Amino acid sequence: MSRVDLVLLHAPSVYDFRERSIMFGPVSDMVPSTPAFEMYPLGFTTMAEYMERHGLKVRIVNLAVLMLNRKDFDVEAAIRDMDPVAFGIDLHWLPHAHGSIEIAKIVKKYHPNTPVIFGGLSSTYFHEELVSYPCVDYVMRGDSTEEPITRLMFALKGKGRVDDIPNLTYKTAAGSVVVNPLEWVPDTMDAISLDYSFNMKAVIRYRDMMGFVPFKDWLQYPVCASLTCRGCTHNCVTCGGSAYAFREHFGRSKVAFRDPELLVRDIEHIQKYIPGPIFVLNDFLQGGRDYVAAFIRGLSRLNLRNPIGFEFFKPPAEEFYEFLNEHLNDYSVEISAESHDDAVRAAFGKHHYTAEQLETSIQAALKHGCSRFDLYFMTGIPTQTAASVLETPAYVESLYGKVNNDPRLLAFTSPMAPFLDPGSMVFDDPAKYGYTRRATTLEEHRQLLIQPSWKHIMNYESHSMSPAEMVDATYEAGVGINRVKAKLGIIDPKVALQTEERAGLARIAMAEIDAIMGGDPAKRESGLLVLKKRVDELSESTVCEKSDLNWPAHVSWRHVWHVLVLWVTENLANLLHLRKPLPHSVSEPSEV
Ligand code: B12
Ligand code: SF4
Image (cartoon, rainbow, N blue to C red):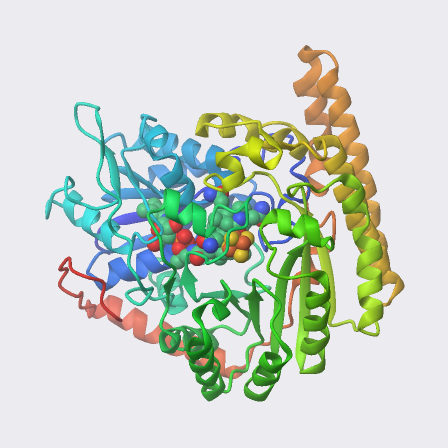
């Protein structure tokens, strides 16, 4: 097999999480990942697919999943045995600040002359500090790097120069830092492809299943995402993906949509190979009436069999649900309302709807065939007090009353943790929004990540609720919602009891950690290590049972058949060297 050009590595949040005793708490309860945040960015797939289309060989290695699955997985040996032209590491989500840099150090230890490239939204925000680490050579900035990274890879192979590659921050041989302009910000998302068959082909090609899987339990719950756009039209004040953050830090002043026909095609690809639910992320209602009509009519043509779920940023009206119901077999909805209190929600930046409008929308969805309505609340948001958080369970109970305790409605709560997003309005001007920032630089965040509990790790303090109050209120509200759901028969009472017990044990462990931290500094490390096994068990499914978030999925012969066809064609292509790359010309993004 010829040499791989780029190996894309995904690190765990904290590199040595297997040895350290850290109570991560409910930080990842609302996402498919464990607290190692083992899910790699979707951008790995879009970049890899794009580069392969232009004649480069790219391999994704999810080190975080490999480390989670095998306690004895030797990261250093695995990296030592790789020999690509360059390594790429994501620091997209700031919670990877520790792991990503530690992995880069290992890469440099075994491959001192191989370039190390970083990318992602957090890399973009901290690009100058990041490139000052000796283990980092290049930082590819921006939200759309498929083309510039391809150009960089050709330059590293001797075909081109780095000084005119847009979005690139790099160190020269003399060690000075050069920041090329952030100019590659395409207006659409049409030049890329979120094609999961790329991942499946790569599994076959590299005989490596676990290195490619997006998160630890993906094979049991093969959920896939589709993306309608890059950027956002809203301005939630703590969000690092808001219109403000994109404009101020990522060079984007306008949302880039994916053509609805291409979006439908992405979903068609998924349904061919993968039986799991499909989440359409980034509210497609932002695209306007024509976009919505074209997308839903396109989906209807597919006669979609996978369950499909949509994220909406504001509660849709009844006619819209009627339209969905007419065109789709099985659809679900997800809305993050953040708080039941209109004033708190408005302080967060979601002043464009009230709880009453939300309730009307939920009732309409359930009336018009919605299979499941997931409703999320969050703790730690501007102006929110512990008392307000503690009102959430009672509000949830009253809401269930308004929908006749319909089990299709599922409410959850989780903390804004571990971090306030870099590049958000609150991060940039904490005092204005009633916060104190506990870390500013990348290095400060790296040090926070290795603190003993999520209370110590958080990079902010709200003036309306102390960290201790926030921790308590979060567990309390989580348990309260859990009890309401059990009482009304929404979830299995046995499972609810287990969750409640876990939350109770988590609070005891948090108190023990506080006592250790307040005691003799010489005994801290040994004291925390005694808790290790317990805190690991208590950092998953603490405020709800994680599997409650899962939607049903089924495998049919159709999927097996398509995977089989892919397996045969891919092996033949490898054997006969049949892959034909596109000539790489750097131009305007083209449709694929
Ligand atoms: C979709 C999404 C998710 C999906 C993730 C899907 C996935 N696997 O990527 C879900 C819902 C699971 C999710 C989870 C989380 N998310 Co999120 N998410 C988003 C969202 C809405 C869109 C991202 C998107 O459109 N990506 C488009 C794809 C195609 O591009 P991409 O993955 O970003 O990759 C491109 C670039 O970033 C860059 N790039 C990325 N990595 C690399 C690496 C290299 C080497 C290079 C060169 C380039 C590069 O190039 C790529 C190609 O162009 C944004 C908000 C927004 N409006 O942008 C938040 C956002 C990115 N998420 C955020 C956060 C905080 C999280 C969580 C940590 C929340 C939590 N505590 O649970 C988790 C982390 C999950 C994990 N790793 O396990 C923050 C990040 C802030 C920050 N800087 O840290 C954002 C900005 C806003 C928010 N608060 O939701 N998220
Ligand atoms: S949290 Fe708000 S600003 Fe951020 S992506 Fe969602 S709707 Fe947009």
